[in-house]
Image 1 (cartoon, rainbow, N blue to C red):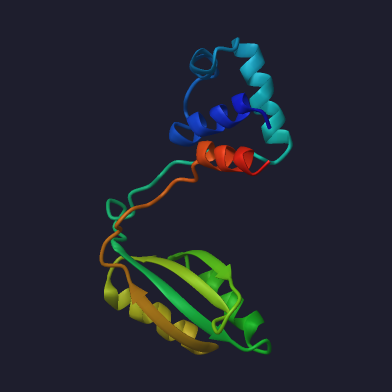
Image 2 (spheres, one colour):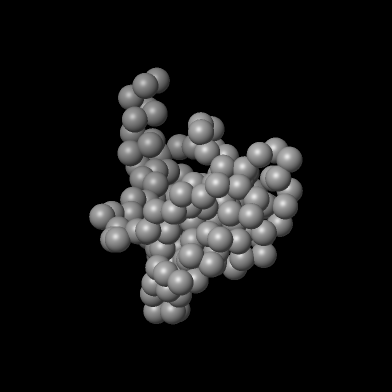
Length: 153
């Protein structure tokens, strides 16, 4: 990873739909040169995809919650089957510590969230945290990561 690749990553994180031509213009490379750099980063697994950011409120799912889910090893297969069957669960993290899993839920209302917690409760213990607002949502800043890494070397 050289400074140009870091800059390309930074630009693509801000606008994943940026054309290769515009990307090349911003980093002072030809379109084929920047295309090759992007292709190599994709092949290396550095760039893993391009995604749309979605406003869940406009999709009718304004209630966001985090559920701490404690499940025994014996009940884990059934719990994971339940998790996969609930489309409102948009992420599931296996974590170290007192809780086995942290789930991210987007639901249409609190009653549906309660229903989800009840279904999960059949296989383990849940503690639900409803998000009141998002103070900030940071994007991974590749420029800062590159700068701090360069300073360490």
